[in-house]
Length: 392
Length: 215
Ligand code: SF4
Ligand code: SF4
Image (cartoon, rainbow over all chains, first blue to last red; front, side, top):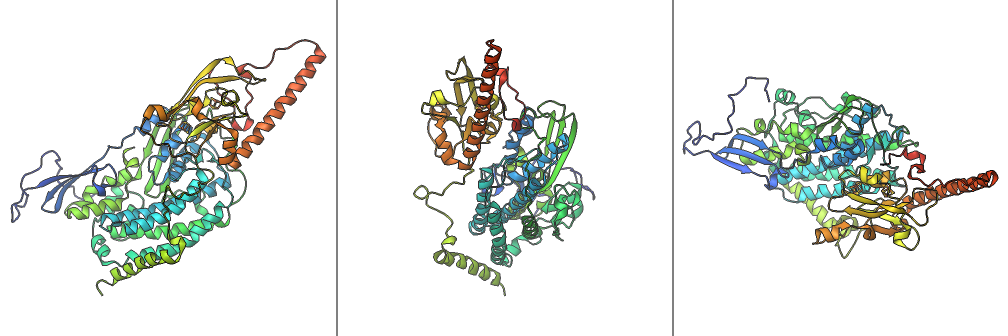
């Protein structure tokens, strides 16, 4: 990864110098620690090889791949439809947004039109996904700081309500497999929208209490402000997207840039941070929840009737014409894209996922250098990674 | 004041703690397995095969067209087509699965088999307490274990079952009307004609698109 400003000396990961470069007072030896792959703070099977000088991180190497499932090659050997349930398992917190990104790419490839009602259902489910992802990420971040249980459990309590909605709509809490090329799989069950309205109506109250619980907490402020700072230029040149990029103050949200789906019809703002530290990332997520609630309220007002899938869309023997397409959406973690090349056969010739968490993770070292090892854990928590997506 | 933020947070946890004694909705967990939640109607776990009538093996709707076997993403369905025809076949492809296995340890509950089946023969069950210590004896389900009556389907997914029953009734009415018309034409012409019962003559609901039967 190249940095726009002056580049540091090349990093050599193989040799660990035995003494500290500055020759510190104690002349301590550098210590190489492997955090993970089962370390509780590493969010799954992820390893950070850190080299420590006392408590200070002097090198950090993210090691991933433990959860590699050959997703892309499997997709190249399955029908287009057959890959849909596999996309659930990328970022298993947000299966509905994964479905949407993949459906969007295939719809571009095959030239399918999504009916109005399906577009509304997609926006509602995607924003609900964002709600539950951001609340639980804030809970996990607090967990990494040592707030064991309470914030995470409060977040999970709310998340569970949203997952219940997903279950009654799609049949599964997490592996929804709901969207289809040109629409959605099934129509809303009776009374579903009212349940969403109730949850959306109650959510601000939960958010208020969640913010009262945390936002003025001195420990949280001390642990997050000025920690894991990511310079704006570096974030842009590394291709970071999502809340991490916006925390650095870059106004870039694909919902606003691409206007995919029907996002141009809703009024919402993009919260931006200033410092790009962990605190900004945490606050951006909380603010984004409020904006998502605004979108949901607008969308819930006017869900139209009508079909939920393009009648041209075929379930079996689906063969898009020769061509290529890139579909991308603003997932809760950042830009989630699917790139497909079709050679006219029932399975894609090339299938490529652009996973936001992997790309956001590549600059972990730059955020952690010079900080204490405890801050490295918090910084990792603020990146919001899901290893299913990082490793694929 | 230093620490006021922490106190404010503690007040919030206290509110949640005391609130759960006052308001029932504050208690969000239940004591499974003594208490159980009612499952959402759309809940899906693993597929089962629907049969009509009383005899599970005779009444299986599955005609062994092997579409689901082909479309299942992790390839966990294994079907062997019968050599002989179903005893009660009328005008439709009437083979039956001599073997129909689903490996539950591979199945990912995606419901694609249900969506692609043109004969309403395979549906999703809601049974989830399937843990076992015997990987091959208990998780590799055979035809006999997979077959469940239509009444079971009606019970677990009433809305879907009503749709599926209506579609089947419409198909049946159409087939009967066609058979009657054929019989009439035959009587008029006076020439015996072969029954349209080859596997090519599958009648597939038009909404599902053309068949891609393995020949
Ligand atoms: S698609 Fe339906 S009818 Fe065909 S083999 Fe599968 S279950 Fe049987
Ligand atoms: S639910 Fe999915 S994985 Fe399971 S048998 Fe059906 S198609 Fe295969």
